[in-house]
Length: 87
Image (cartoon, rainbow, N blue to C red; front, side, top):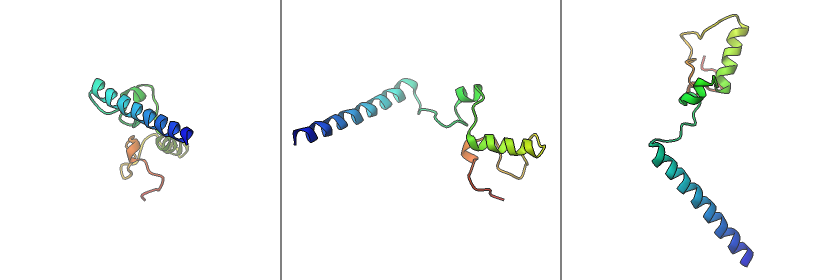
């Protein structure tokens, strides 16, 4: 019984630590953490793209095209990427 109590208390402490750390990060930076690839300027500067965007660009290159069709939702935003074609 004592071991279970120790595990539960340790789990609560660990979760509380992560909530405090996330709160401090938001207070220090003044905004949410930018984890979305399409909106993070550091990832964009390094040329990092989401997997769906890379796949779309590879398909266009294989077809001999160098840009996106204006009728598609290909705009370089990972949030616009989808696993299902909308055509």
